[in-house]
Length: 226
Image (cartoon, rainbow, N blue to C red; front, side, top):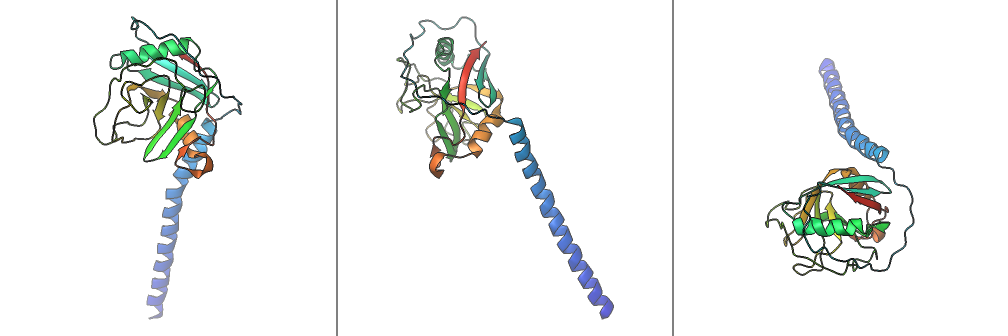
């Protein structure tokens, strides 16, 4: 009986050690991933003030040469976006006109959504969500009503809640999202720099809300198109 008791104790100890080892193995990659992201994303503190609403002359013709890449230089690094010119020519043409006018220079990404849908909204010099360039254009390339219709990395136009009200503001989705009313023109996808958006999102929203001004500041210093 004594030998059997010792065997049970040893087996129990073995199970306990195995459980601890398993839990440690599960926890380690998560910690490493967070640390790796923090090491890769370095945000410089930048102070920007809300600007007066800017007006830009709308383009009168579509671009003859399709821009393939839009590069957003921010205080946290560079976000590169591949454009969908074939699917959204009006949108990419309008964005190119805004970029070339300097519309986005030193503007703050003013809104973050962290529950249900996952996006960061940028492109409003007033940082209120009410700014517009003085013109609007039609919706294009709207997805179907299906699961994850705005996948991670998707870049889509924001609007004013009615059809064909696209202006300057856009949303970048940092996680797969499902929108019941997919009314936002998709015009590109992030091909590098998605970790910047994830880092901003991990900081959360001011006041602890699910949606609002991000705690971590993301400022567009300039945008280039080519």
